Image (tube, rainbow, N blue to C red):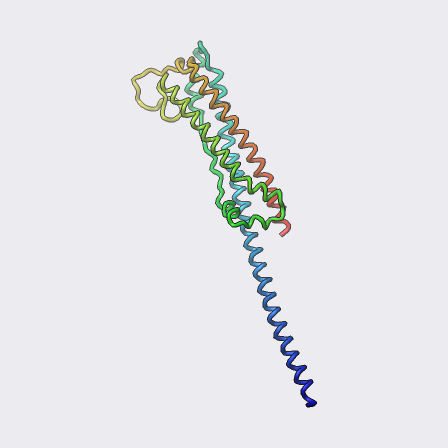
Length: 231
């Protein structure tokens, strides 16, 4: 009987050791799982940052094309009138050749996956979550506006082609034609002037949207960099 307390004490110690070992194992497993999840999320955030850096470069590229073409359309519009001079007619095809259309191809795959997974709620910055969540709609609105502008350019080209030979693209005709070039007929057509003014109006909206998107991207990149710095 004298050994019973000692044996019971030994059993209790063994139980405590086993229990502590199990709890420690669970704690280590949970800690490791959280660490793996944090690392995975950190990689996702870095990928989102890379995607928006690409968006920043793409928006800058599109802006350069749009702003150049806006200047060209303004110059063409200034040539329009009932009695264009010889210099205006000579400048027509040269300016026409400088008209360019480009669509903005902003990447979105990584952000789309982040939003679909719900992991965006892990970001502690509420403003960053809001900006990221609003980005897809802003991007789609801009693409739609660019589409309207492209249609306006197509209408302008179609109207011009009814008055003078005009190539499938922009510039002077680069195909054999028996018809004389008639830039004066284009410059004196008020329907073409209206179409030109509408295309320029839509392009200015595109440029303004591009500016707003670039500002939004800059803010997103700043917030992401601040979040990464705290990791």
